[in-house]
Image 1 (cartoon, helix red, strand yellow):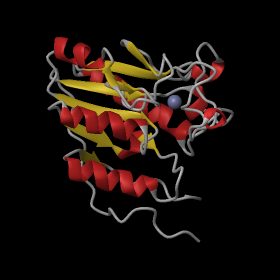
Image 2 (cartoon, helix red, strand yellow):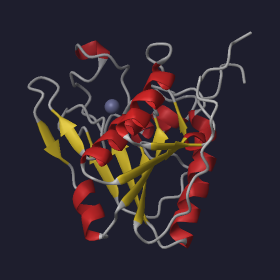
Image 3 (cartoon, protein in one colour):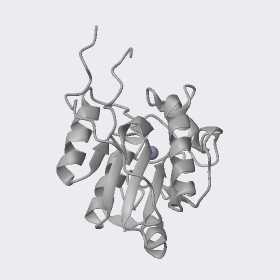
Length: 216
Ligand SMILES: [Zn+2]
């Protein structure tokens, strides 16, 4: 049997949405959220419905909702076959790159990785060779909406969700991550727990229950 996947037994209740809040839905795409996807995140399929609930709650409260979409060229140093670490995923204009069929999409979609960059954070893209970073339009969208608080959900909790949340903290937002609305890819075992620890240390309010233990 497995031991509990997280040492974080404390549970913080999520705060309600309001007009000053943006919900950022990260990479809920077939390749991550569908069992047939190229980089299926365990539990990613279950996250879609939870995320839809967050989208509804956000819209009902007058919050801003924005989405990110990983969008890669067929060849990029982001992929293991080209020298990176990830299986091929979210290649532009493929089924795998589409936002999940069941995802409620009610807001702008910000693509990342378009020019072959490592699009981990929704706020920036990084050239995988030079390490140079460039902002996406997400920050501008949130500024224009007068947002002070950002709730980050989607996939994967230990990669793009984490980097988006950390960037949001750096940009001065009050940041929250509801754990039921994410899942962890765990390229290395324990990445999920390490991500939660890192997020909490950075000041992200992590709410709800920890990553689902294997075989839950
Ligand atoms: Zn990617």
